Image (cartoon, rainbow, N blue to C red; front, side, top):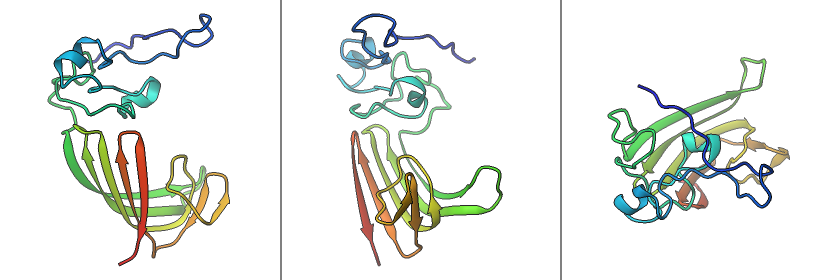
Length: 166
């Protein structure tokens, strides 16, 4: 069966000098940090982003992260995987494609690594967290051309963007 949401920590403003809430799963000193690969493993990002992301300074994830919602689950993502990806974006209220991209992504969740090769992109990309843009038309807007290839390397809290041509 499913889990139950449980608040962890104190919200800013609820108490003077309180720190923002952070999941205790994998924090140094917790059971999972001491039993699964040492300090820094199994750290999830706080709040809603933690449903899909490790904490940036986590050293990796394990199948047996104690206290994590997916611990020992047969439905958990594999720790190493790759996929061909295709994306199409549309403006709200429209069925016209404004941006499309294709590429291949590799994940090493056990090391908190990601590589994403984008070999086709075309149109107006509007996104938070997109790759750098030399020809931005507005905030969170970039005109992409098909001749540009990009590789994104994500290692923990560091990201590197490489543009290349064949």
